Length: 300
Ligand SMILES: *Cc1c(COP(=O)(O)O)cnc(C)c1O
Image (cartoon, rainbow, N blue to C red):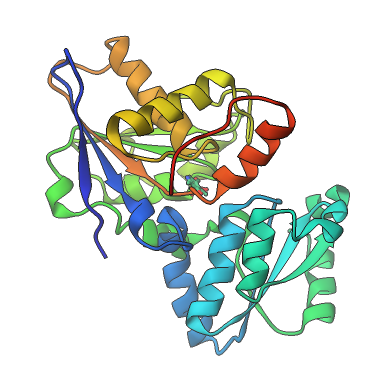
C-alpha cells in the first residue's frame, strides 16, 4: 500500500519539502503502526494463534492499533497496561475506551511490574493467565515490524536527499534506513531523551547513512510545551496537515527549525514521514485542559 506525498510550500527558501501522509492509511491502525503490525499478523496466522497480547501506556497509539487490527483480522486482543489506577478510568480515557470498543481486554499492572514485562517469569505468568498467544512487544518493534516499515518508501521517493521521521523505539527508522538509497540521508527525531536508541537501531540495520537529531524531545516522552502546541496549530492552519503532539509534531518542528537555521544544504529535497498517531490528541487535550493551557485545535 502506498500513501501520497503532500507538498509543504516554504516561503523564501530553495528547499523542497514534502510530507508522506501515512496517517491516512487507516483511521485506527495508524501510520507506522499499520506497517509494524502487517507481517506480525501474517506470522500470528501462520502459527495458528487466535490471541494477540501486547503492552502499552494509557495513551498508546500501538495499543489502539493492535486492538483495531485484532477486530479487523479476527484475533482476540489483550493489552497489558502500565498503571493499576487506570482500571477504573477506562471510560474517561479516549485511547482505552476506543480499544475496548474494538474488543480488547486489559490487564492493568503496577509500574514496577510493568518494568519486568520482558522477564521470562512475567511472560510465564501471562501464559498461565491468558493461555496461548502471539506476543507483540511494547511499541510493536521486532524484525517483522522493521520489515513492514521497509515498505514505506517507494521507487518514486528515490529523488529525495533527506528522509525524516519521528523515533520512539527506532523500529520505523530502521525500516526506513533499510529501504533508503545510499545517496539518501535518513534523519531520526527521538520523541524521548536518551542515547540508547543508536544501539537499538544498529541491531536492525547495516547501513550508515543515518543520524539522530536529539534536540527536539521537548522535555521527554509525552511532554509538550506551549511553543510546540502553538506550532502544531499554526502548521495545521497553514497546510491543513494535522500533527500529533507526541511524535510527528516534534519531528516537523525539528525539520522546520533546521531549515530555518540553514542546516540543510541549499536545494535539498526533504521527505518527512507522517507516522500518524493523531488519536493521541484527545488524551493530550484532556491534560492541557486540566492545566488550563492552550489545546491542540486540529480536526482529524
Ligand atoms: C509509535 C510511533 C512512532 C515511533 O515509532 P518507532 O518505530 O517506535 O520508533 C512514531 N510516530 C508515531 C505517530 C507513532 O505512533
